[in-house]
Image 1: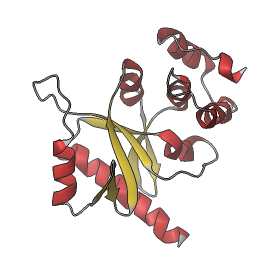
Image 2: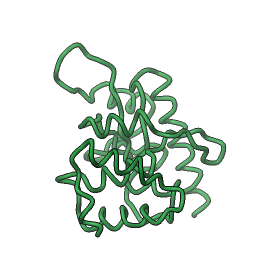
Image 3: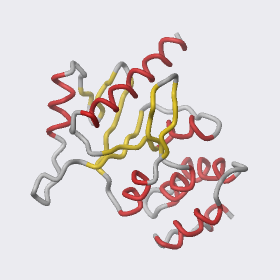
Length: 172
């Protein structure tokens, strides 16, 4: 069962690379709890959160229609706000803020079972978890776990938090 789940995850990542290669999104980065898998101890989660830059539609309105059409064409069903990509509930979220923009732009390309995948750096994950309106108890706990990483770039983290007016105080 676990082997099938992991191969499903690798297949879902391959699909994300296809969605970028096909121009449905300009770029993406894994965020949320699944991103922790690449940096620290994984935590239970229901879905794969993906921050994305969408191609410029020429209007100020954001449309997810191209993503949903791509999913349908590729046989991926939709369940509420999730695409079920290779069995993995996946939520593709257009970048909602300058902080998320930076998180996507600075994402690292890492390897998962031979599949290259763009992942939000831990410093940006901390900032996203602590951003006003996002800082739930669960997210503060995830931020605290990331702060224990020996390779965490504290200077970069402080610059990100200061630039975006985010308080680090919830972590002590």
